Amino acid sequence: MQGDNHDASKYIAVTLSSSSPYLHNPQSLAAVHPAIGYIGQVGGMRDVQLLGVSKELWDAEQHAILEALSGTHGILRVDVQEKKQRAKRDEL
Image (cartoon, rainbow, N blue to C red; front, side, top):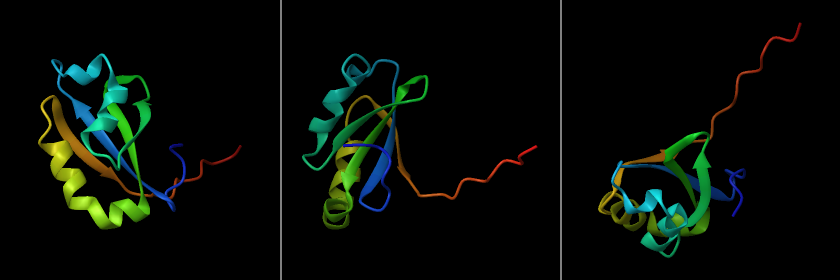
């Protein structure tokens, strides 16, 4: 799953605790719920991981997915990412 299509997928950033078992194997976050796919680390932040869910599955299972992630040991925070228009920089 690629992390670049907000029309087809919903993205979730999860923040891991310093003692989280997922720090050593973040790909295993995909096993928390069958609808979740692992995208990757957010920038240089080892404790923040990006997950993806197809829009179709998200619409049907949003609450179950969020409950599963929020109730998982080692996950401190769950943030659903919203599509935002990026500001264009001034070109000189």
